[in-house]
Image 1 (cartoon, rainbow, N blue to C red):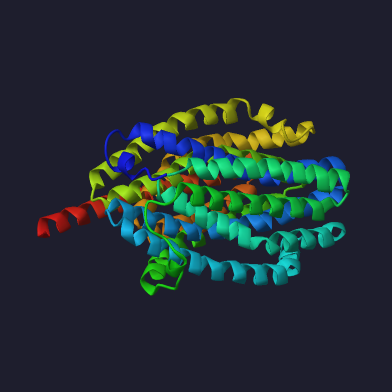
Image 2: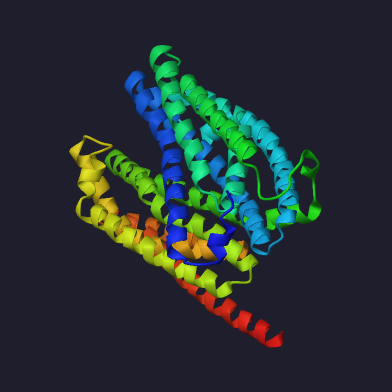
Length: 450
């Protein structure tokens, strides 16, 4: 299970790619959760059911982003401990994470079950779909403990250098979700409630499988129930690393919701077109995102081992590989956006609007290949506070203002509105470059002093 040796010694690119591919596939399968719910409900339910699942999924995606960001703190801290050769401390780190996220799970469950109705109102769920939206959010929130548990276990596996186990468990869970949707929605006619129950069941299966794999394979450090306690030092470190990532992820999601609101004001065709384009972009961005997540674990172990030069090389290799994939995806988005949009829409006007918006995202696909790797590198170093700052700056100082400005230019062009996203990404890359120069100079001064 532990790949520390291959991360801190030997070749860089091949182990990084072997680690990244399962991460990419796992992210893809997780993204399929909401897509499958929507597809099955669309086949067997009413338009109000589709609206409810679509809106409820957005709410739960924000919750998942929060938990995933927080769990990054556990990934980085565990990876650094293993890189430092302090595997004996791994059990205490994992125990602290379990204690911390146990409280997070209980708090999220209570808050989200209570806030299901206000959140649905905030998302402007249509009146005819409001009740179903609340039901979807409440049922999924009742399974928040599984969302939290899976992310903690996934953080542990990534920190150990194991990306294959989370892939296997989420693959099995995805099939369970599909079967559950067909059974509960299709055969039993439970509609939105059936889709939510299938999702919770699938998440529970993924957690049980992770625990079984951990039990049978063992861990590279000792771990017992006595380690599950509130260790102030470890919990503080996990929060210092994870909270900035979580805050950035949530606020960036909010910024895209704000853009959606701006586009909604341009009419139903523009709204539907951007909605289709954003769904496609959600899948396209999984590639650079997987490289970013993989680099976080890879860099964390090398920083812990004192291999700063190797960590920098890993970031460059990651950028190169991600950019190669980005060129292909950018080509598809720019020249064949209408074909891609046709996978989710039939109306020719909607397809044309989506293709127009995708022209701008094609540019962003190239930039994000670099930007996500920068995020992964600095998260792995433990500089998560700066990653948060640059993400929020890009979202609220560039992305939203530029999209608002472009939406007021006549004639209205979704391509120009979409340019707000690559503009934001470019600014973030410049911020990363400046911070890299700053940290490199700081590291040289530290080495000289030592």
